[in-house]
Image 1 (cartoon, rainbow, N blue to C red):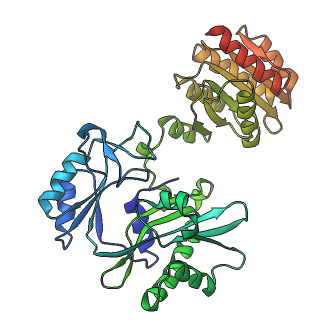
Image 2 (cartoon, rainbow, N blue to C red):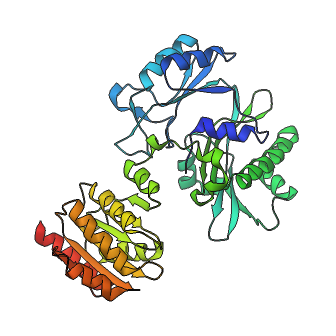
Length: 399
């Protein structure tokens, strides 16, 4: 789960981390009120969307001369005019693609006199099972170019969670940032604070870009992005409450209500599978046979008839879907329950696209009998390869 910048900064401030004063705003009036609560005379108006590259982004509706999603304002009047331009319009960045994201929230912060920008992030390194620090002296809007063109300017090291954060890790961060004196000490303290925040909130990614050195010699978090392990949110109802479903795909939001793991993709073959590994294999074999998956959808190990019906409806809401492949291996999941759900869903939605079903495992014969006796045009498959070949052929036949 992702959260907005202003929410991330509020969380980090609880761990003693220095962030500029700021207030969120959902309207122009709220943006003006937020600016009036700040000392000024320099303000920053920042679009709040779940995507990076806001500073270099452009608003679709404002034409070629449009300014980006992060703007300096030298008066409350400037804050107001910028808020009017940004709210309700679509910001296109390198991470949103051409579709962009509509801006419904702003963050108005106090201006900061910047002497130098740095980059600092923490993430889960699945290769080592550790928490990785990624550090660079080259922070700011061009960090992607730095990673591509001069990777030697980026330092990465890991922390074993069994031992936890140690003083030498803080020194490694300060050394990578090439800081001396008071700034060196501040960086060591900040690294520990960020690690503590990362662990305490079950974070999966925490990115500070930029971390800035101010003219008066302080390290301040100027921008922050945080993502959390969704499987751990039950331990953090306060963080779960920060979820902004307007920033997510509506189908993915609906799927989460049924405890379904759904991710929309760009293909034309809808997939319903139980188990993430089997889902990945199913998507791979669809591509191997010359088509592309329209989604990743894992119904889990204990899906009910209602859950399967919901999954079908979510798949079919995607207008790009030209056929559906159901691939179920019944362990805890019973094939007859899946078959019941498939038949109910197909009838409920008046299925008009080809459907291929491969069932194996617990109660497989009962499941196949339910499908065969349904009176519906359901194509049975013997194995995964057979299923992929059949759905691709059925879609081509229907085209």
